[in-house]
Image (cartoon, rainbow, N blue to C red; front, side, top):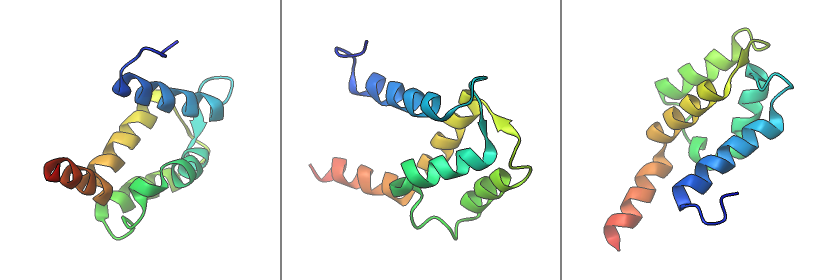
Length: 99
């Protein structure tokens, strides 16, 4: 459906597909499933972030009542939050400025 889509549209479509492939029939993920998905599919963004207070806050919120479910919107907020605090984001910015 997005063959002619922009890179940004394809990126968000991919995030939606990954979420939907792991979500239950109600289109939700348990917090423990969310944590596992982030650790397996978002590794390069979260790698090395373990000592940052915001990262610890996000991950610990997924450990609390881990069977509670999150929807797609909450999942995307997690992705954005983790991306914004990631060292990889700074590396990406550095590549752009050195071109």
